[in-house]
Length: 350
Image 1: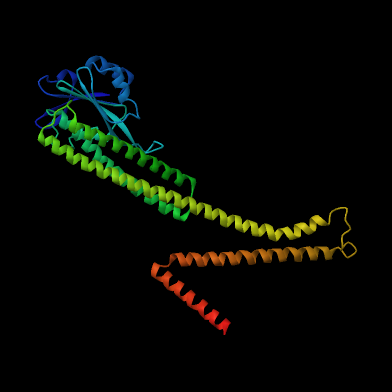
Image 2: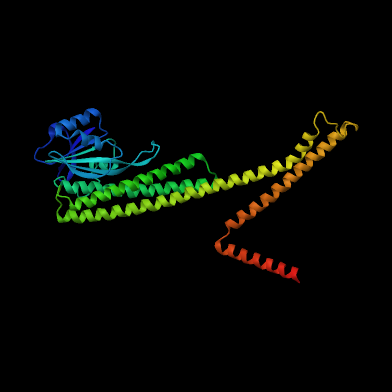
């Protein structure tokens, strides 16, 4: 969809194509563009087809270059889509400066462009296109920071659920958040390189006020990069810790199964040894004696199995109680254990 905007009395107002005032700067906003709309933009504003394809490429990095009669800038901005496999991701926005027109092109919708259309961004000047580009990057940084905080809150909530029970769905959610953080980090670093190029390029001219604004946007960008790196490292450590917990739980289950297998091996060996062609030792006795002996063996196996499992459960409960203690309490428990061992050793030597 292509919409047209002009600034009237400080407010950005949507106008129809036939009501455009040629004396005022024009913002052409193309979002969720179709094939026909991209063809229209290409023909009406003489934008090269290669540049249109670059803008519509989801993996295109931020950059600035000169076209035939216009200047192209590509900025990566964050997007939230709850229906997507990776809910937080980034998309490129192409910004074309051509005469008194600035054209933004994006293959999907974006919260950044919505904020400009709703006049939620302060000090926007369509008369100063370089400042307008920096305003877009500044708004993108604010959305990056907001989405990063949301990612951190969602990962904390998922971690609390995984403490009770680890399920595949929760692991996949954490994996999606980890992908989002990697995507954010890559896009923020790409935008950082673009900001560095803006200071030295001769394609667009910045006044002193715009240069100070660029420096402030660079600080926000650097803060977002550090935050994304921090959250990514934390989430990676959490995933590694839960993998260790899952492996430990599997080892505990295998240990219990091994104990049961060892207990059941003895009666299995006896029954296998006395096969059909082997003379049974109790076949001369009455019919109820083999039943009694088999029942006693089964009861003995059950008792031995229960005894091993109760010891294991007692040890596990003691470990859980120890983990719930504070650091100071754990230290006191260790000291008391060492003292008792020393007393036992002293009594044994005496």
